[in-house]
Length: 436
Ligand SMILES: Cc1cc2nc3c(=O)[nH]c(=O)nc-3n(C[C@H](O)[C@H](O)[C@H](O)COP(=O)(O)OP(=O)(O)OC[C@H]3O[C@@H](n4cnc5c(N)ncnc54)[C@H](O)[C@@H]3O)c2cc1C
Image 1 (cartoon, rainbow, N blue to C red):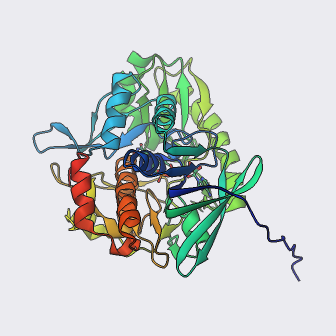
Image 2 (cartoon, helix red, strand yellow):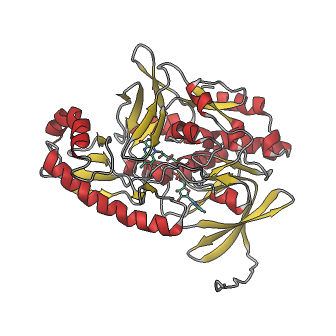
Image 3 (cartoon, rainbow, N blue to C red):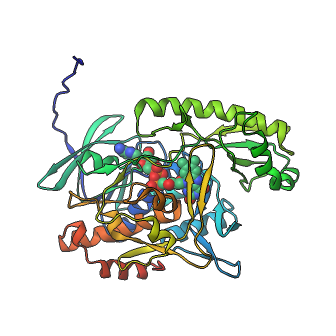
């Protein structure tokens, strides 16, 4: 018989009561918290890491995707409005982002993770109605009569409780939804995670000149060098001699590591750094301009693309994405292709026609079973192929912004998340400058 340990129940002081509690301070969670506070809500934001930005900073993903699209004539236009647009513009003005640059039939905005970290902190600190806890992990949700009544949060000073009218799960892994007993699914074939890293002292003019040959180099040496990916990218970060390397992929016995499993995550963090050493060595030997380059650092944490997603009132489907469906409850435009990191070192791409987009339905942000819970970011309700498009940072921030607007309605009209007045929410989003 498995030996068991009984953990005593405890009563916690309620540290604060707010209108909106956001769990997870990644791209989606920060958007939800900042926009919520701007709309006059009292907000609590809880983040288990010592910094904000989630994968965008801790995972050092390095390009904002979904913020722009290419038109049929090849011109690049903005696809977002409100908070994500303001973040992108500010980063560019500070020299912490450049572009947007064309990427096949779409476009992306490379950024410096350090710049994002600082900007998100500033935006949070500027909101007097927003209280931030870092090093704080939500560990319990108390649910009664289909509503979350409070959450327990583990901090360095022990556990505390928070109460809110509305809760947002922006944990990436649907952790709050699972704590609240909502159904989630992982799917049969989640995407592979990766460890990003930066190299410095790269001879950039030489390296940029050789970039066109990278796909051939990777393909030629995939077997002989035991490379994790057949394709990948090297992005100049915008700083002298610095390149962000997107070439890693972490597999366990040939299958993707589950970033929501404690043992697999631990193994993958170590394997990721072992891969960084091997990949840097490969780049130094094989890619012009890298001979004298060194690893500045690996990303602070493993880049986890996909784990649990909620079962929502609607599940975004592959046909919705490729059919460029415009929903009546759309809360923002998404346009990034389906980009699925699959087995065999391959990446599967399905592009939308230039000049087109689909919209993200509000119902994908409403998990079934709990009335005062919304989700934003990569734990939304979507099938695996649709997820491979909507998971990028532009949509994540749009969703965070939208759930903040929705939260104000839920508070003001005392209705469950699924009965929110979507026309009103869309009206308010348009007022924030969001193209719908
Ligand atoms: C290797 C890699 C490369 C990528 N490349 C790109 C790219 O180039 N461009 C692009 O746009 N997108 C890219 N993506 C996708 C994109 O980065 C993510 O989908 C997006 O950042 C997710 O944002 P999020 O806010 O939903 O979740 P996350 O960024 O994962 O944030 C979730 C946050 O919640 C916190 N958290 C989790 N559980 C708790 C808890 N219980 N209590 C408190 N806090 C908690 C986490 O610490 C984290 O900070 C990439 C992803 C990966 C992994």
